[in-house]
Image (cartoon, rainbow, N blue to C red; front, side, top):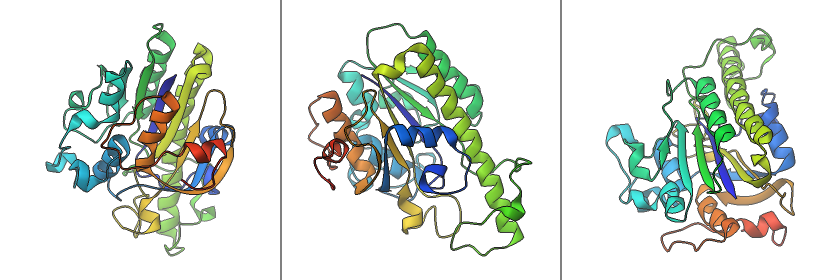
Length: 296
């Protein structure tokens, strides 16, 4: 089974599947076909610590990522990254677009790093990821990490059909024209992100790879608004998390289990029937996915 890991920047839960009027139809379809966790949380409200926790299965203070990589912080043991672990277990590991767990992504165990034209040109990068999927012919399973710059600031100008005067800023922000305009621009950024996800998912479907590929979508932390990103509130660490199994999980739709990003690594180990490394601090979500338990 292959894995496609789709991740956006600074999105929190402000997408259509979580009840917001944000135009993300591809993510909505993914949620309807998979499992959406209503109460998923990152292990930190900033980028590198959050991503490091997800991809090592360890808390930021345990894996060493206490700050941002471009500020000099780093993993104590990059060999504990998910890409490195999967590579050791026979996967082709491919990075396309954004990552924020190392100054040099080659340290993380990727066998291939696609030569993206720009770290912020998500549409071009999505086309590269789709091209990789379409051209892949090997029997070796692959792990593809497709990281998007959206919905990070600066946001694009709002699309004409997203009219700011008919947009509600996210709570607890005041309903003011400037905040409405800012939210309209966020919604436009989210649309770009969703379009890119659609490009990758369409490539999976066209290639026939959708029938043997596990899809994971999440983000790093809350959106870049006051009292959210960089803040230890629910709005700072509450994240989107959607999983879709090629054969479908016994349990589908929205679930209310309280889960952490750190639970993803052990869950993947169980789904892939791989031994769980001894450094993992999370708990497998498989009992929730199979319907045998309501909480992990």
